[in-house]
Image (cartoon, rainbow, N blue to C red):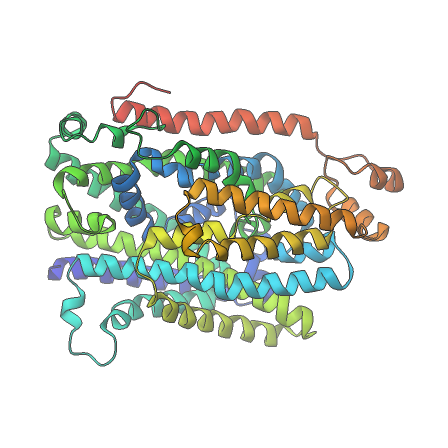
Amino acid sequence: MTLLDWLVVALYLGASLALGLWVARRGARNMAEFFVGGRAIPWWLAATSMAATTFNVDTPLYVAGVVARRGVAGTWEWWCFALAHVLLAVLLAKLWRRANVMTDLQLTELRYGGHPAAFLRGFRAFLFAVPLNCISIGYGMLALRKVMEGLGLLQNLQGLPGDDRLWAIMPIVIITVAYTAVAGLWGVVVTDLLQYVLAMAGALIVMFYALHEVGGLGAMVEGLHAAGKSAHLQLVPRGEDALLPLTTLLGYLGIQWWAFRNSDGGGMFVQRLSATANEQEAERATHAFNILNYVVRTWPWIMVGLAALLLLPGLEDPELAYPTLMLRYLPPGLLGLVFASLLAAFMSTVSTQVNWGASYLVNDLYARFAGVSEERKLMAAARWCSVGLTVLAAAVSFFMEDVGTVFRFLILIGTGPGLVLLLRWFWWRINAWAEIAAMGAALVIAFASLIPAYAGLGFGIKLAVTAFGSLAVWLPVMLLTPPERPEVLEGFYRRVRPGGAWGPQRAATGLPPLDDLGRDLRRWLAWSVGILGVMLALGALLLRRPAP
């Protein structure tokens, strides 16, 4: 890193801070502005923010590690979520926007009633905002430390008091929390636009230089064949030399996307959808996100991971391939720009997770259970929660070592409740006890996967055990407990008017559903084929493979 590189990084950090503080006056008005942007964020800005949020600094490291260990087909680990995200675009986005909630957990007490609903809302708010959110932020910090280690930046910090890894990430974290705590969601989404563009530019630059070093796309493909790594090029695993077990692929496509706790779009995405003006804007935002996330950003990382197999053979930690290639091949100035692009990816995700976690703590715990309604107190709590979550996540990050392992554990621990979360929109019989049972069973089974005798199973088998083990618990619990009170179900139906099995509520209210569920499911199938088809066709073209 030369002086020119550091000037580029400083320019980016200054621009991000200035942009975030520029919108601070709007975000600081009240809770609605701070957490859902006053419901005035345009669809294209919401879409870019969603894409930037899922593009963390860990992502290129994670993809490089997956490609080295399980080939291109290994990326079905996150490609499979396209099925859930398309479902969100064609069906669920408009339902969330009609619900008109500030957080997705607020829906809990609209859909269910009584003490079980209150307990479920409070417990999930704490669980997702603090332990799970801090682990997620923490492994982004782990990835940033790995990038800095790969660039040799931590060597310059030796001799400082305390842990040099903490000093390395602290300035970036402070800047991120500064505009997040002051400007709220507007600060997050406006800086996300800059950060997504910069992050994609950085990925394309690294891809260009890596491919140049191996002699181009054709030479890379031929080199991988010659090196006995043809299986790494498979888009879909097949044959005896496949690096991804078939059971794992079936687990991704047949279980993971619908069993995961965000299968209905809950969490950070709902915050963006709630921030749009209406349900049409919410649907446009999600469609645009799917294109940005799966079609646009997939292949630069994979190309870098494949090139690294030839340029860095035998690399002990394949997740370090990305920063190692940066350091080895990028000229001064561009190295700083790409490092700034990784900082951008990190900051966009952390700012979103901090603001989202604070929304749970303030809206779903402090305001709900402490009975606080004064805007001044709620805004102060929102800022303190933002700072506190960041500090806790930084502490958690020091206990992590492998980005891919943490990513898969987060998937596993969230697998199980997804089917209940989907069905609650379309079947009146789902009650709070079913969701509580599904979440509790999934947590127990996921932590049981750490037992040595269970840890040796394939990831696809673990997904199946968690998903269907949870189903075996929550379904009888639902049937043995009473349904929600008629007034609760009718109130929810009046507000959202979904399609599906709502016969008693339609009869009681006299209101027809606003959606044709059959038509929307056909649209889901068509859009899924479109998004995944274009993505795979691009890969087949780049890798000189027959198109599946």
